[in-house]
Image (cartoon, rainbow, N blue to C red; front, side, top):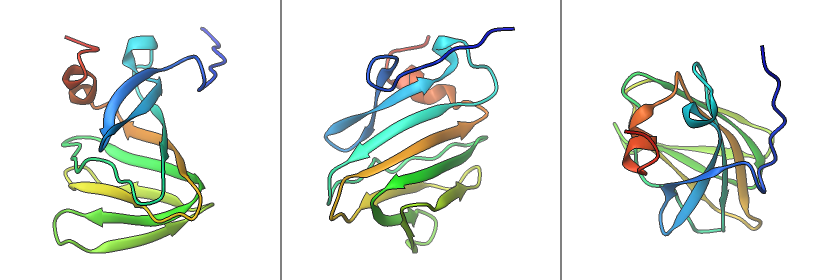
Length: 126
């Protein structure tokens, strides 16, 4: 059994999930995680992440700061969120988050089980 304490300022790899920017994979298969992930997102007001889908994984994250919407790619519906909310996206649902500000959007979480395609596209896994 292993315990790891990870710092989002230094213990991460970048993944291209924000339009024009990067998110941080903190807990992911490349560091030993087998059953879950934790990513750290920071987006400026007006930024959004890339529309994506996890075919077999649930996407779950907590809004640490900011507000915005999650866009359901199946029907275009926007689901508002704010600081303190938890977001759940079922497997196979295309989605994207948009930050409305006035402060930066920060969230933590990720697909479970790990969506290996994210890391393969980023050149982090084969």
